[in-house]
Length: 233
Length: 172
Image: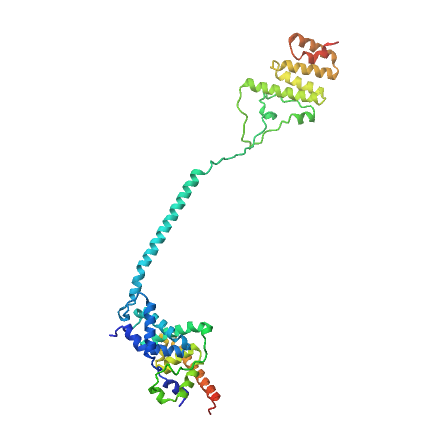
């Protein structure tokens, strides 16, 4: 007999003893759990049908959890928007210094430029045009106040020249002031500066004459002690 | 028109077939009960998908093959040589046993156990169960040519194993 014939002759194999069959049957019933005891009456489709409520409850639970999550998110957004501090917006703008820039000093006579005799004076009085991109503009003031400001600025320049030991510069700046403001409100102060500049330049005669005139014009001036040296011959 | 089989009847008629297939597919003796029960559990759950126009045993064979493959993946269960247990078989010799001697039967079973599993499945279905190759290809979800090829290789493996075992036994 060939080997393959032997194989074919094996057949389906021996019968399983009834005892083992019964044991497997019991295990099968136990494994099926809630399935009916009579296996023949248990349609397999029933198991799928039994899963449907599980699917329904799973979907419902997911819906509830999702809804709660959405509600929590909305409450969080509301709480944040109501409790957060107000935002402060800081904006930086370029602006020129209003007190020293000549641009901010309105010219009483546009045709009469300032006379800057030395570079030092130019350094003291920088006449730099404001940048075109400057956002800030000088506040609008009355003509009286702006004239006084310019008078003050011109005399400040003269006073700084005196402090630097440049009486000629001081004198020329005072002269320029007196030319621009013949009846200026700071004429008394300007005249006192001119007398001191003349004394510093050694022009005692002219200083004495102008000091005498000053005393007559302003007999009660508190600047008289400043020009006193010019009054002594 | 084919009638859908009743599970209880199917179990009573085919439990021995499934048991023997599992054993021939390499499942150890101690695990046969558990795996037979697992196979019928799957059969019970899939019974609605069974097409009664197709042969039943190749369909059952697929469940057994899947269970045996999974069982085989665990190396602790792996037993290469299977010897049929004398106490499980019916003590009265069957018609097949009357045709072949016990030694030849044991030799055939041992040679069969040495054929690779995927080839052994085709060999069992064709040579032992008498299924046609197209039916086997359909049941195992493989091309017909693959089934033929596996059958050819399985026969070669089997015959080599038989020859080797006969040499070991001292036959001619």
